[in-house]
Image (cartoon, rainbow, N blue to C red; front, side, top):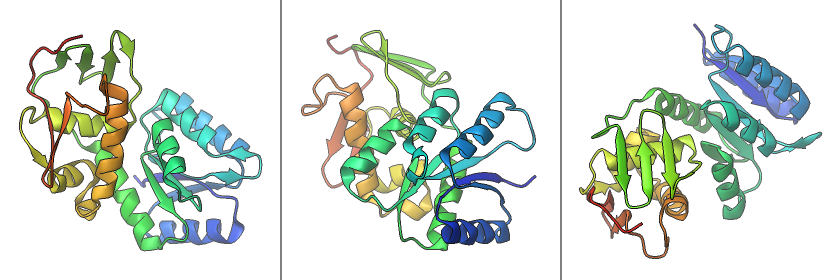
Length: 241
C-alpha cells in the first residue's frame, strides 16, 4: 500500500513540483491550495481512520489564501498523532517554537531541496512507527505523572499537552532515567540518523519540554544537562510537589 500524503501549498508551481517529485518517489499525494479544501480532506480522514486511503503525513504551508496553515496543525493534533511537516518562508525562532508547540513535528524553511523534504518525510514516518521501550508504564515523580502507554502527562493534576516529538524525547530519556543520553543518541533515536549533527533541534525541544514540565525551567530538576555530552532524566525518586 502506498504512503499517502496530504500536501497543502498555494503556490501552483511549487505544489506541482512537490507533487510530481513525491509521486516519482512512490508516494500518493492529495494536494490542495486552500485551507478549506485541506480541512475537508482531513476531516474525512479523521472520520474514517480504518480506510486504506488514509493519510500517513501532512505537509502544510502557513500562508494560505483563506487562512493560516497553523489552524490545520491544531485540527490534526486535537484528534490524532498524524505527523505534520510545516514548509514556510518564515524562519524566525519564535514562529518555529509556536508551531512546534501547536503540534508540528518538523519545520522546513523555503527554499529547500526535494532531497531534504524526502529525508524529513522518511524521518517523520519512521518516528511515527517507532516504539520506545520504557522502564515502566506509569511514573510519578513529584507533581509530575506520566502514563507511557496512554501518552498522557499531568503536572499538578492538570493534563500537559506534549507534541508527538516532545513525548518521544521524554520517553527516550525515561528509558535510561538517571543515565546520560548523548546528543547523538537522542537525535538518532527520536529524529533519525540524518539528524545526528542537528544539536539545535535537540536544544529547542529540551527548552520546550522544560517549559512544560519543570516547576522552574531556569533551574531544572527533571531534565538535566550534561554539558557538552547530552541530557538525562533525573533518578526516579520522589521530588517535592
